[in-house]
Amino acid sequence: MTPEDRRDADRDDDPAAAARVCAEPVSAGEGIVESVGLDVAHDSDALLIVTLRFPNGGRSRIPLAGPAVARVLERLGLADVGELVGRPFSALAPALPVNAGD
Image 1 (tube, helix red, strand yellow):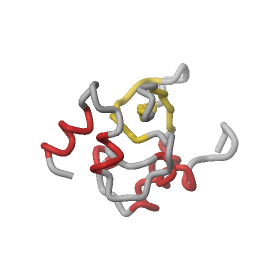
Image 2 (tube, helix red, strand yellow; image 1 turned 180 degrees about the vertical axis):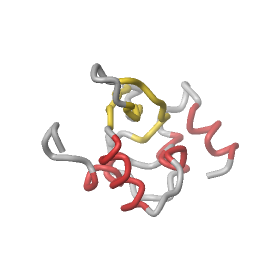
Image 3 (tube, helix red, strand yellow; image 1 turned 30 degrees about the vertical axis):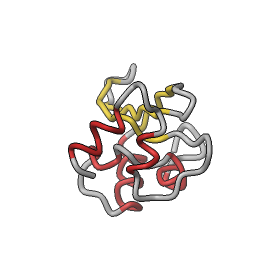
Image 4 (cartoon, helix red, strand yellow; image 1 turned 90 degrees about the vertical axis):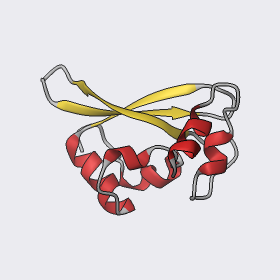
């Protein structure tokens, strides 16, 4: 994804732009990774916060612990968490833990 594509995907007046620039298939109503950032859990462990943006403009934040982040990156063949931006949630979901303790 080029910087121009990312800029277009981040435009608040066009929530579907991220779906258009994403190379992976996107289902109607599916969240697209808008941004990633770091946060700290109550036990001082680092968490990756994935912000999803939906076609209706809604947003959702998903915290991921280290093992889940590693699985997601490995499954998608990525070297950097920044490469998650613009991808549909369905690309991440298979690598996410089923239980909170995973």
